[in-house]
Length: 467
Ligand code: ADP
Image (cartoon, rainbow, N blue to C red):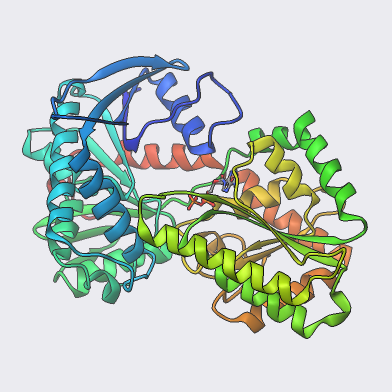
């Protein structure tokens, strides 16, 4: 078995094997790293006056972790800048929010070089290298420049946008060319994969060969869809835990016979929270008989507070939820409970289970794991209804959800109505099918299928023959 090297912007293995509070992704990667005695390399999150390339190596939960510090300028230009102000909005179809500054792309390239330079001494000839996400699109190119011939795979956790959107990025060809230095590119959905090959073929003069190999910029790369999942066994166990039961009981008691619609998201403009509130308002306006019989609980944790767009969305949501509550509330009923805090995973599991409807309506999302967690948390004898945006990657797999267009208030309002009225038999039928997908296509299956595809891919993209 080859040793695995995982490279990502941040590194967060669970402190102990099997510890339930870490995310499913971290647990799955940590398990593979433990098994192959691998290394997880990335940014410490700390900044230093002057970049030294000094590696700090330690063991966390049985995983070898190698961290570097970056400069404050790197944080501003690479992380807050190109990653979160340029690529994130653009790849989520928010061209209006995408900022293009030369210092951002220069900072991004510099940090990708710094990553390559510092991880280099750790790489042994038989290692398999797996790079994660949009912060490190250029890493393989930088490693190849430094003579690395190992197999290098890349997985993009966010959407790959439609060709006409991607071409609005200044320097898009250079960024796309850099991806052809990988051996395997993994996308969340077939739609994202096809958008990438569409760009390569129609904007870069490339060719799509059979077997999922794209040729452009004088190189070949294998592409595939590898939809990520949750750690389903761990999450199902979390639902059965004492804190989950406590939270479930507490929530159900507080419902006082009312039904709960639940949203759980990072506070991000891609999640469609304002549109969700407005659709719910429409539902309330259309269905006065439902007033006081239900409420929407929206749990939203703040992230990326240093980026202005995130401050704006927060202020916006405060205003909209306040307005809707002012309009519809009565002395003993508030239609929206809006909570800005993070929950522990086991507590969250209990809250999911208490919800009659899981309302997951991002305007654009790579996958959306909340949809999968909601399904995994349901009572198999009396499951709730998942309402899911057609623009979440998860919609490609979760066809038995009520699929909605999150831009249409009427569409979402009608789905809420339909979900509330759905007979138990139909809820059971839909849930069983959804749960089957969540259980079989979990994060371990995702990891194994990607690593297997990468291991099977011939080393070095340029020598790859079309199949
Ligand atoms: P993204 O990666 O864009 O944040 P996902 O839906 O794929 O979106 O993943 C979000 C993860 O963060 C899920 O595992 C979810 O449980 C967790 N999460 C989101 N909001 C909260 C919150 N308020 N408290 C705790 N966990 C949260």
